[in-house]
Length: 269
Image 1 (tube, rainbow, N blue to C red):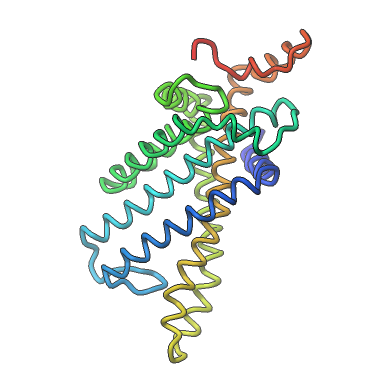
Image 2 (cartoon, helix red, strand yellow; image 1 turned 90 degrees about the horizontal axis):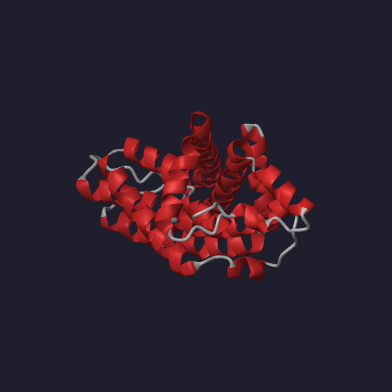
């Protein structure tokens, strides 16, 4: 698949699993904005840009926390998307509940927490570290449930391996996908922000801006987080097809009368 086809496949998976993904993404995106709302108020930052007169340590901590929460939410959703991508690849129709049964929360949630913490530290130390972590290890939650990896550490290792294959194709596409959805989020947020700025000349409109801007970003992030999670799952499947012949293994399993599920599990993993 081309890069565009990969993004399209992620959107198709999102449409298929929109209800559970968006139902989880929405409250988490709202909670994220609520935390940032309080933080911005403490730093006396004004909407819509929230840019300080001079960047300070507390401001950098807030920015780092924002990226950490993004990484955490996308990781949680990525594990669900990975659980859904397996049956989708095999052409099996399963209910949302059956996908949840494949979710493995005792492994997925700690993994998401670790990725969020690492993202916080990496952002605080500079965005280059965050970019590398995003490209190399972001597929781990999807690997955990797609491949049924025995534990999160194995999933992290597999994520790095898959992301760096074929000239770091999967890692690059993950960064591309994040960039595309970041632009979309800015577009969705900018429309609301432009209205808020226009109303800024109206008495009392500053109060409206205070809640409208976070609401716009919560809405945009809800969609983006779910879409990026689906992209992770698609990248795991696509990379394995491209570099490991997963589609051939599934075809052989079906020729033996099997459903192909065993082919998704990496040997000794």
